[in-house]
Length: 403
Image (cartoon, rainbow, N blue to C red; front, side, top):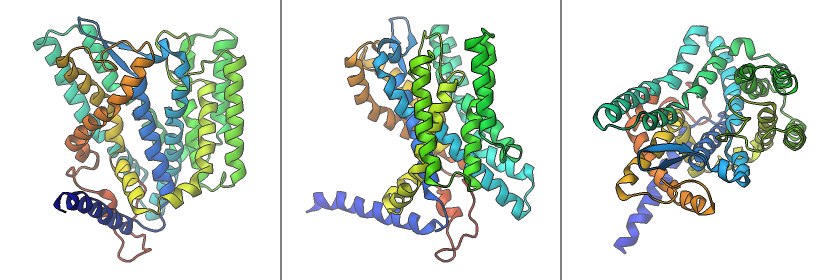
C-alpha cells in the first residue's frame, strides 16, 4: 500500500544510515564516553526547560522558577543536573587526547587550539544574534530594559560553563595527575569558612573551578586506568549519595541541586560541597554503567542518535535557552498560554510545561539546522564522525581523534 511504503521506506533509510555510521566508527572507540556526554548534555537541556519560566505580566517578561513555588520538585534537579558527568567525560577525553597529541609530536598550542576552536566557534553567532536582538527590542520595539536584560541573561547563561571548561582544558597538562581529593579539600574548606565561620560569600566563587575540578580530575584518573574496578564506582555512588544526604539533612544545604530564585544558598552558583558530593555519586553511577552502555551502543540506531548529539553538543548547549525564548515570544501572539507565560506555581503549570517540551525541541532543531555547521567549520549536513573516522578496513584506527 502506498501509504505504508513511505514510513517503511523512511525506517529502512534510517537503518541504512545508522549502519553506515556504525561501520565508519573505529572498533577501538569507547562509545560509552559518547553516550555519557550525550546524556549529560540532554539532561542539562531538559532540566533548564523544566525549571526556567518566563512570565508575561502585561508589560513584558520576567524570570521565575517553579522550584521557588514547588520545593517538592527538587528531585527533578537530581535527575537533570548532570554537569559533573560532562566534566568527568571532558577530563577523560582531554587527558587521552593530549597524550595522543604528544605521541604524534603535536605541540601543546596546536592541541589546545584544536580543542578550544570547537568550544568557542559557535559562540560568535550566539553573541552576534543576541546583540542585534537586544538592540532591536530596545530601540525598535520599545521593550522594557528589565525584559531585555532577563532575555539576554538567560541566553548567555551557558557561557559560564564554557569558560570554566576551557580553563580546565587549558590546564590539562598540569591537572592530568592531580588527585581529585585535593580540589575536594578546597571545596570543603571554602564551605567551612563560609558557613561555619562567617567568611564573606564571595569566597565561595573559589569553588567555581575547584568544584568542577573534582569530576574533571576523576575523569583524568579514569583515562589512566585508575578507577577501573567496579568497587570504585560503587564507592563513589554510595559515598557521594550518603554524604549529600547528610549535608542536606543535617548541615542545612538546599535539597535542590540547581539555584532557586530567592533562596539564601544555591548549590550551583557557586558550587557547594553538596553539589560536589552529589556529582561524585553521579560519576560513580556513570562508571558502573560503562559496560551496559558499550553493549547498548553496539546497536547502530542507538549509536547514530548518540553520535548526532555529540556532533552538535556545543550548539545544543548554547542555543537551547534561545529555543525556549523564541517559543515563548511567538506564543505571545496567541495570548498568555498555560505552562509558557503563566506563573509556575502549581501542578497545572508542570503538566502544561511537559506538553511544551516537544515544541522547544522543534525550535532547537531549527537552531541546529541554522548554526550546527559553525561547530565544525563546515556545512550543517557534514558528519565529522563519518568524515574523520572512516577506516580503510574494519578495525583500523588511523585518523581517529578524540572528540
